[in-house]
Length: 117
View 1 (cartoon, helix red, strand yellow):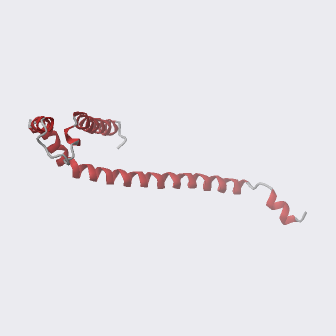
View 2: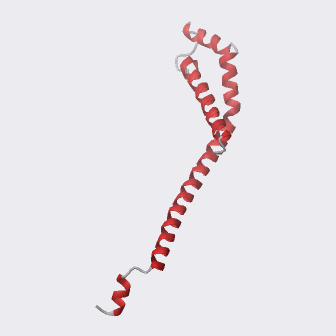
View 3: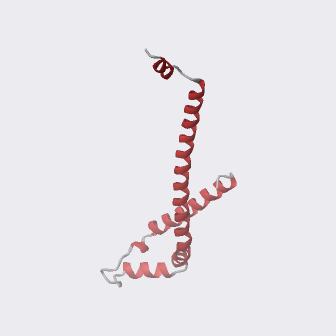
């Protein structure tokens, strides 16, 4: 073996430190990239949620205010057109949506209280 080949096969402590720094930096960069993407996604989701809040309020008022009951009864009596979408008349769908909304808000509150957001 030539002298240069021997130097390349031996472990230089400085090279090992540099490789360890590179490994840490690669892991850190991957975490940074993943978190930036997650935060961008969360930001867009929160924008969409905030934009939909007036619709959520209107839907809750429709469900709680008596109009829903009147529409439901009219549908049961066959007074509504056959082609009309009726998903909003499903008590389960509305209840599940409002419950999910409350659960997600509670999740955000807990994350905030824990200093995670």
